[in-house]
Length: 414
Image 1 (cartoon, helix red, strand yellow):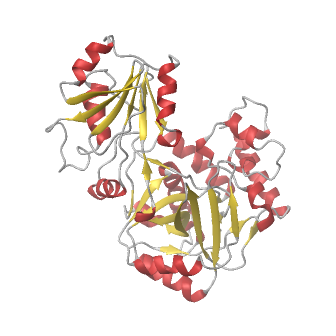
Image 2 (cartoon, rainbow, N blue to C red):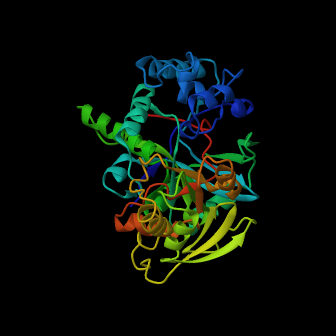
Image 3 (tube, one colour):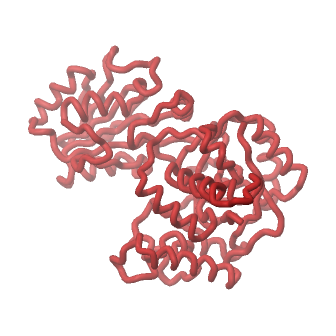
């Protein structure tokens, strides 16, 4: 059963939250972070992307950069830009995009649940990326940024969300990207006890986004336990910070593909090969959106096409075989275009659906790419089914939006 605990959050005073809060470290590069933090000494980028305090081009993995993160984290606390709560609280964090709001609980998630597989994954992680975040957690002795979990819906927890969010929030602002962020502190002991009890009834938590951050946070906690001769099991490092959303609140958006060439084929030859496994319908110049599972939108030569996978090309009884990312990866990208490894092949790139299908069209029309393929988004039910079956999703399958804003609350490991 899922074990969570409240914690003494380290967070900005209300009047500073918009200056401190930032996008997550992994959605922008060093130059973009430098630009966003320009003129703002309170920006969390100074802690999560501290290379911005060095000359452009400085190695972001240099030991001096991690040291700078520690120095800046201490500095933020000394100056009162980050202040630790006096008691252990839970928090509710709401995000609003396109008029739709999702509410999550900010909790300390148990390291052992990650190590034992009760916190379920659906993606592979890369060791180099894990190692970078492990160093960051280790040197700061804190989870500066939360990870993003989903859990099966629970009516008692929904009622707590309804009750708490009637009160005035601690933070309420719209970030520069237009997404709303609202945050409440749950400090009533009775409500805190109920949240802990209700999570104990939930068999599994699911990593929605942030597999590398989850791995890094859990592995550092596990490492601290092994290195402490007096380890008892109730230390703060046994938990890492997560925002856990009821699954029904979350919506996965499409994650699309653009490819540089047709593997030596003409457009006509390519379409003929596609037609062996798909019903191909030309849709003209107006943007075509996939209509449902097993329907794809292809943009090629200034035109949109509907591709519907023929019966027998997918397996609806197999949690991986049913995925449109599997169907398109096997029957188009691999069999026709010769792209076998989505992680490493330089001929393919991926575009999050937040950018819209116009971005696919733009990248083909400007000659950078030859064709684009838009997929119908995966559902939360599919993600949970895959995680429960112990399978791993193909690369670049899920895109969650909005991303969690970093800097609303931090979890110290001591």
